[in-house]
Amino acid sequence: GYRGVAKTGGAAVPDAKAVGRADRPSRSILIHNMFDKDEETDEGWEDDIRLDLEEECGKHGRISRVVVMSSEPGGRIYASFETEDGAARCAAALAGRWFDKRQLRVEFVDGGDVPPGPPTGSAA
Image (cartoon, rainbow, N blue to C red; front, side):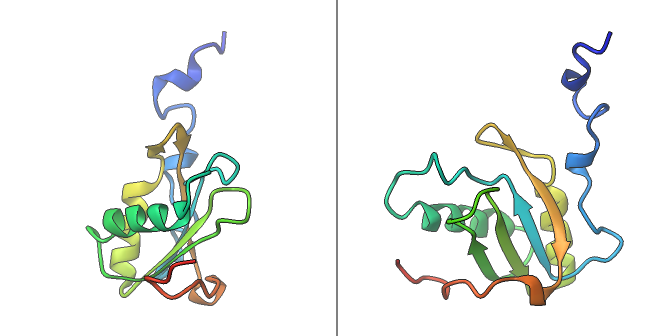
């Protein structure tokens, strides 16, 4: 039967590790499932997640902006890089990874689609 298919680790669900729109890369990526806004209760949790992401993605390239969509469902975070290469390396590193029991999905987005988040370092 089909029981246990999902446990084989990737064979049954290749999609999560595939970066969306990989045929048209850009300098900006959108990461899904990074958090659940209904589970986050700590003061300033958006900043914590943004800093975590900046640290993780900063290994792959220089980041110009990170926007945490903290008031919307879906756990989405936009990250913009100075180079397409940095964005691509970060996307490949994060896609399909498990973060706090959620599997991340990543896709490229156009810079114009990235919302104007608060300036880096601002406190709410």
